Amino acid sequence: MLLSLACESSNENIININFNKVDGYFVSNKTLLNSGNNYLYIESKAKFDNIFIPMPYPFDPNKITKVDFSKNVVIAVIKNGRSYWEIEPIEVKLGGNILHYKYSAVCVADSMSWGAVIPNIIEIEKTYFSGINYYENNEYLFSIDVK
Image (cartoon, rainbow, N blue to C red; front, side, top):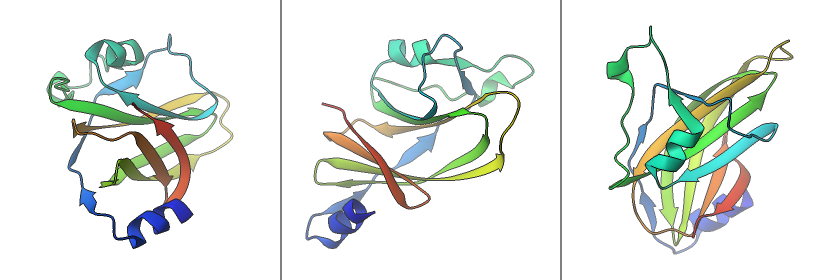
């Protein structure tokens, strides 16, 4: 949280970044994930297709978001464990060369007998930034370098 406050309270320009939620995908069972949270930055369709698979029938194929990787990149959080989560993106801001991605996460079922892999995927227009800070329920959790 200190990073968020420091960034937002400085004289640095903070820019709101438009994003779209990417719907209609689940994580391939061939994808190797850490237990807990996994944080991803994806620049190519090939990498995206290695991780995510479109939902099969009866999911409406017209509701599957098509990402245009010539213009956009994908940011994702994947929760992997014995809990079921509802995750919603809140905002994306650019401060200097760091992207700040805030999302809400609510655990709706805990200590399940089966594993759940819950993806939260958004797309943003390609722009320069060197890292992403992830904030869950307004709390700083993790950073990744992207360049």
